[in-house]
Image (cartoon, rainbow, N blue to C red; front, side):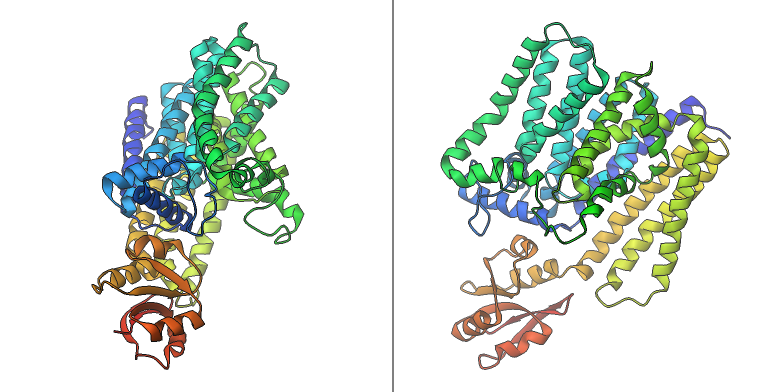
Length: 528
């Protein structure tokens, strides 16, 4: 039976509530991203020192991120303690705020029902959902860039100076989240929009622009001035020149070697990342972009603006010689969700979307069968249950939803895809919580070390620095090579974290007592 309007509305509300609940369930997840653990350490150090203007890495270098995410992390940890949930909760709140702002953006052109569908598309898009649970700067940047574009469109439509000022404030918050990119993207998007579409601006545009710039500077400038005066040329280089957040970041890789991959692959990267990031809605991606781009001729101008927005971000990231990282695409996902949400209500795209969804579902299904039949190494095997419980409902949702859409049962198809995708995400969260301590060694190691009550001991880890160890282990941690470990082992009480095959490095001193074993063939040992 086809869903009537009331039935669709009930399903939209129910699925939205389920999506929010699954995101909140992610508070139980351990930290799975090293960057998140690193930023949590910076915030914890700020809490201990009381220094909230200038930040440094554990190695003493200028911390290469603006302060907003560290401030929010610090507030969360001050209220809830240095826990996984505290590190993540502020970020989930911002992610849900981005969903709401995207709903407001969609409402500038679409009905309430369509806009609720847009919000669900964003919430269930693979890249957005994953990044929502990985506390970094990309979700805050995406929220505030989307908010800036929303207020810009409101200003273009209404001509109120208040909306111009709010666009400036939102851009300032984007800069305080991730640096210059927070203002580069809004200015670039609006500039391309002006060149291509020649919109009619309000008559007082010059005065309103001055107000927007003033609001931007009032919010963004104080921290940059205060921190710059304290940290000097290292700060200027990091945030404005050739450092990791300066203009040089757009012209050379900061995370990888320029020769790590052929140059031509960079031109294809984001053309691959966008369809991957919008799963399970990839089937409606091209129709949405096509309809949005053509909306210039008599259609809703907001759809055209969203298409220009997506194409501008894609082009900028593609042409920039900097690193090609999928999360950098996140500011393009909200306008993409608007376009996809619109195209899902256009019946002529049902067949194309069905074919794409069946192809992707079949590919994932084949990958699931292949993985299930492969002999896996001891390190890889713990990942298999996580992958299986995620891919199975996702494949069912893609193929089942495609078949419904192919039979022109569009509403049921959208509900089915959304519901099965949420099931997949829920299962992924549960499986990750259960399996992570079999995958990553650092929480089990930290529990073992934290239970040792001896006060005057050194905690030494043989190997390279890892922020997971520094975050979870409550004592000061030192990362050493074999020679330093051997000297310290013979000099005084030590708790060491070493690979099984490195026990020989402890020969000649006190006999090692094994406290616990951890994944990755790591041992916690002590000499007292």
